[in-house]
Image (cartoon, rainbow, N blue to C red; front, top):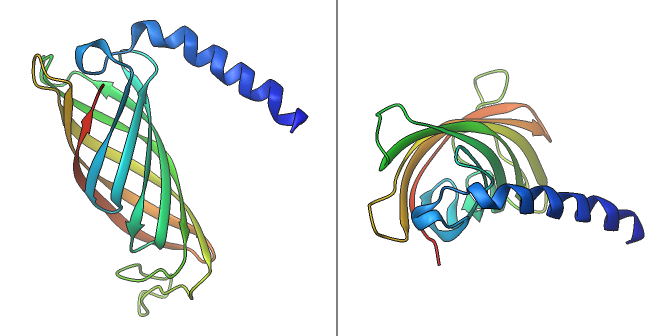
Length: 168
């Protein structure tokens, strides 16, 4: 526990420096909500600056009965708008439990299945669009990207989701 104390304090200090320029709805830095797709479940977003944010999703998907993913996102103003922005970034995925669906293995002939209790680890790259209507504490988003399974075997798939977050 003592080993974790200093790194946690450093992270809290870095985040506290960044909060002053957070760019969520109404200038808020933390939002939570629900998303549908892969995964279907809860989503949390923590803005660290006007262009950057951490996102954590917890839910169920084809990658595991219980799935956690975290992304670091860069937001950019492709439409010259304060309401609609694009975003992209890398992330990591951990799936726990039975995995199934349309993952293809290296031989391109077999579908990818994990047995109950296995843990899957992967990386993903996301691209999306978010809409923050004026004078509301809401963010609506649509995202898609590629997921690369690393453990227990190599495989690829597509992630996609739509959701909404509330900024209290």
